[in-house]
Length: 126
Length: 168
Image (cartoon, rainbow over all chains, first blue to last red):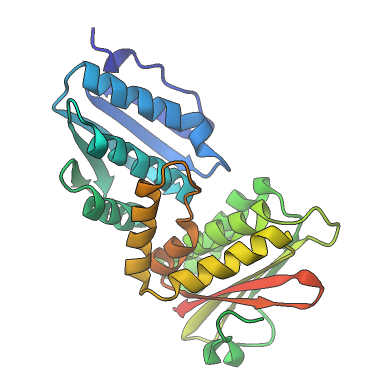
């Protein structure tokens, strides 16, 4: 069994989180807590570490169902992309699956892409 | 002190706001007020694009106001939404602690030297380069994603008013 599949999924009010495959995570709902890092930073870090242990070529993070997030939550995605960018050993592509219909996703992931385009991929769904 | 002059647009706006709320600075209220703002803008102006922009402006301005409000009994927040038919103005008045006031002045001055997109990108770069530091993405996000310009006015009694003004 892969490390990625066994990462413990946190229970967070307002967010549904599922590991949907050996390299896939899906988040939906809203993230507007005062300190979303306390719920999610450790989880994202565990996924990142597991992806390296599993030597994954790609991690798919489907955020298309995240209808609204605050800037502290956007920071968590910046951090995740930065961990991949700064990884000296095994590197994987972090693919964010985003919705064309959700405004924050268009602006945030475009900005993130400009920062970490060598490790990031953006996929749009309707 | 006024970081940015109140725009000519805001001076033309109606004396009676379309929305006025006063409430204690509690995090628990933010989601509800943001979603009311979405509903209000969608219903009044009929565009989802404006409703989405309103959500960003309200979420980030109210988060800042709640996070940095003083413990004084006079620290109630005031939110108003006004429009002159061409422009919309969101205004949040709060009583911040003194330490926050100087960093807010500095941050507002800093982001206003760049256009909104450049300032948002610069905030991402800063967040990436300083992983242990506070994100400080919020104000840049308001300008870029919210499509508004920001100004800050210092009022009597230590209160400040953050105003976000943009096209309808």
